[in-house]
Image 1 (cartoon, rainbow, N blue to C red):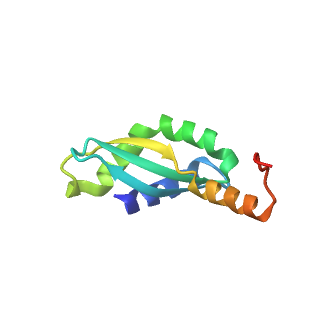
Image 2 (cartoon, one colour; image 1 turned 30 degrees about the vertical axis):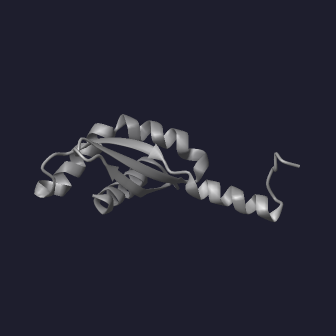
Image 3 (cartoon, rainbow, N blue to C red; image 1 turned 180 degrees about the vertical axis):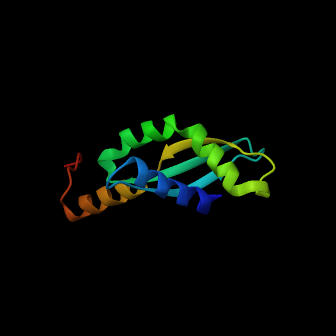
Length: 107
C-alpha cells in the first residue's frame, strides 16, 4: 500500500502543483483495517498548508484510485487520514542549532 500510495501522491503533486514534491514517509493501518494514517513529507515546506488543504479536499478520489490500484489485495479499503511528517524539518532545525545558525531560545 505504501508504494502504490507513494506513486499516486507523486503523480498528484505533478498534476496539482508546480515544483512541489510529496512523499509518503509511512502508512500506519489500524488493527481492524478501518483507518490508515498516511504521513506525508512535502518539499518545499512552505507549501505544506496549501498542499494539505488540496489533499484533504481530494481524499475520497485518492481512496477510490488506491482501491482500484490495489484491487483484491485488501478485503476492506481503510479510511485515509493524512498527516504531515515534519521529521526532516525537525532534523534540519537541530542541525542548524548545533552549527549555531538557528534561533536558539536557550541562551
